[in-house]
Length: 561
Image 1 (cartoon, helix red, strand yellow):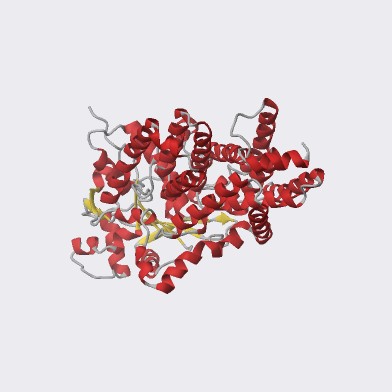
Image 2: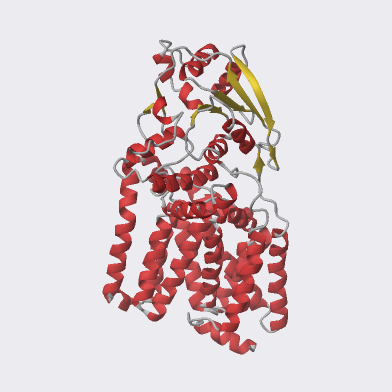
């Protein structure tokens, strides 16, 4: 392909049509390369990346148990009791779509941290293929394969392709929706309209950050002046179907878990305070150097300037600039912010980086291809030796407790609670055990039940509470304590409890490496244990009042006779 031909094609925009067989071979080879790096070390370690990862991993277990136990006559009570047994699930905090996929992987491969990470792989593949096809709508294959490798191996994105997080599934579904949208504008066929609605709804039912799709599609429709699309009845049928799928969940979440909607509702209070408003607007631009890296960011700026000056490939320039604006404006006004939320925002910058290199070296195509291959290799090769954060130790503690007598009621105090609770469920297929967390004794309900309204409770009060609850074993990790957690640790270091095992957490994360897991057992059981416990649940304005005897000591839920 000559430089003149390439410029002519990029000027009018490539057609969004099917790839030839030879190019599909290239795409498959590209996926093999990426999967080789994604799958490296997938079986190492437990669920650890952050507290969210433990919740996502256990939410999938909850969905699997929900389907297997089929409590269709009492689903809400079942959910509350499940949280009482395993207080590391986050019911209603995130949309449910990914957890259904994760549950299917658990059903096929069994409960294991690597299985939860494997459930992200199909989405990573979908993201790579969708982005390749999006770029091919406006650019030659050299830009498509190089930009796909670069974005997939960005450290800020690569980490989440090996973790049980929602960022990659959301990104993949958004990219699939955008590709279907481009095909819709090009062909106006009903199948692509329904495809756009399907993937958009699925993305919104995976994570709230997918809401940028709405402004993107609307602005792109206006800029491209595809007014005939508004006359299609299929557009309104697809919008109605997508709304029917998405709106009920958000209304239910707003009712049962209002705090979760902070991710979907902008914090407009900052508009009244100029300093806060400017801070909100600057949050994501300030994170670009770290998320993209300085060299790639510089290439992106050069590519944007070249595209605006030369007016080449104008359809792609319009799409990518609208993409950048829609992501920025949508995500900047969300009350909840994190650099990882802007992964969809990074891709247009990657496109401008590779297109800038292509334009600068366009007169010498071989040199341009070599330069793009070198940049892609600079991102891909480090991914082959990348070691994601891992942790090992909680599984050993849970496995030890699974073989101990009187271990039906456990207590955990520490920062690794999510990983420990996940492992307890893994080694307890009949769901006999129940885990209580530190918030149970810090809430004040048990001290009141014991006639000791001390707030905060003293170490002596905590000892009485744990004994009154009938806790068989208490586990404390030394990974970092609040004032309340330190009180609990001191309470267990008494002559009323005995240290039966001490384990050391192994990790490449300095925050938890070397953490001790201390397993205690009471010397004497309570003569009159409490029959009920109040378990605080963040999504509810009140605590859950649960029966200990119903939730521990036997297979749960009880099978109907």
